[in-house]
Image (cartoon, rainbow, N blue to C red; front, side, top):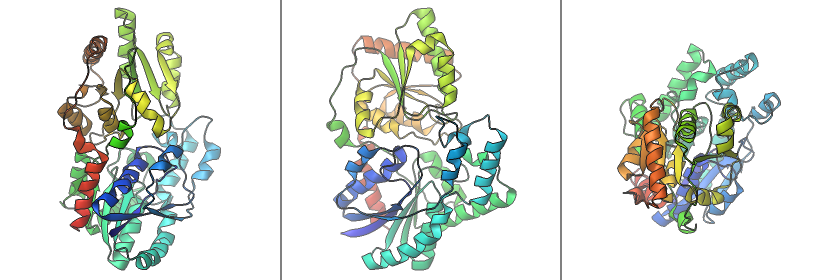
Length: 422
């Protein structure tokens, strides 16, 4: 069996869609003739932990860990109670202290605060690759400092190397949040181009991202492998017939994902047309949305906020919903939330609030899996919710089209073919 080393910052017990991408690839790679090894930090800093994901770590995987030093522990003392680490970046109402911290983060830690792991990792992996007979590596970012480990190993050992971009680098929406100087911007672009030109293969998680990366890499080919859903998880979960019309959103809500236009329409339907609608947000929700809901008497009664649940519990939430809400990032047509694929597998109709030319919208339209509404079109949202409400009352079932190409096994087969052709 051929061997491949995957270098990733996020690994269980880290939670979220970022960790699931490579957790699932490693689960199915042995079925296609590849034995995966995983290299990850021993003591990473992340906000969400999900120990239920550890059951998916294949016994065939060898996980190699090395301690990492990163400055995020110092941020904890400045965070307000209940705030998220990412809120410092995503908040539009930044105080002076937050701006200083962002400037320091952007201009002193290049390309990101995990940069201190690059040098010791290259030293450790140079020995491990030789001792275990591994000549193929995969790096996945963000954090994009992980790609610099791959770059240095490529230059030092001439390994075969795939660089996987779950999100962009210099075109990412948060890139402008760090008050970068002109010199630092040029360093980022140089690093990014070196990765894009030296990697044997580049992967992107969406079609828009692939196009951007191809242009930044001088026109090189960039393969698209999206995220997906695991058939095993849905086959193991029971089918549920929801009794009430509840629209649920599962995942993070922050200033880049703003559901307030949708909530205003829900309120209008409740008040003006006496619709019996309830909404639930399951996962980490920023303070801005919490305050918005709490300040409105109608929404405070009809909108429920629930904390993050482990991944093995989320399937019941999907299947007990009348419809599922998707709110992609603002101004990021290439952002495909990982939950979209699990939404598809759940068989519940999707209401997407975002641009109709986005990759997420394209997937929903092709699968005939729901409705897409621009966030500034209240009438279209009203009509969409009415349509979903009447479908629910009529007990209509849904049969989405062509979604098996997003199964984790099928996506891993595509990855294995790329590995075979390096």
